[in-house]
Structure formats: structure tokens, C-alpha cells
Image (cartoon, rainbow, N blue to C red; front, side):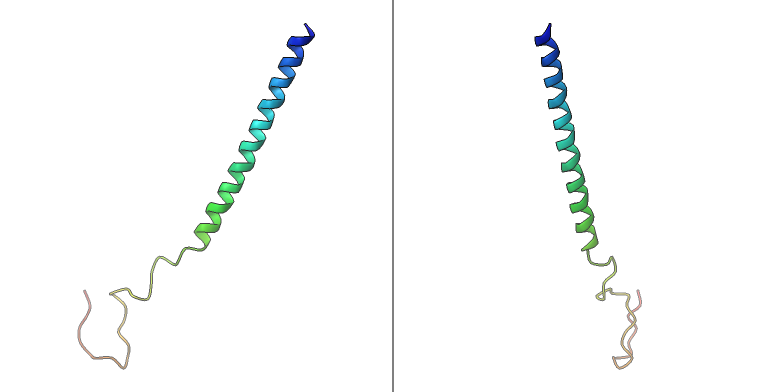
Length: 64
């Protein structure tokens, strides 16, 4: 009887350790993903074709 109780306790410890490891990996992965999103360039850039032409540039119509 003691063997089966010890085996169950050992099994529960292993399961708890696996859950803890999974949680740690998940938190690290989410933190890395958020850090990667924070370093993304803005959605609109200065090379947008609809940008207003400079005041000293040629006065031609480039609006689409």
C-alpha cells in the first residue's frame, strides 16, 4: 500500500513540476512577443505615396 501512495505522490510532484515549467516558458514567450511588438516600426511611414509634397518641391499634382 505504501508503494502506491508514494507512486501517486511522485506522479503528482512530476505533474506539478511540468505545469510550473510550462507556465514559466509561457510567461517568457509572452514577454518576448510583447517586446518584439514594442520594437515594430509604426504602421505608417514617411515614404507614403499620399504624403503632402514639400513646400519647396515642384508644384505638380500627385494626389491619387
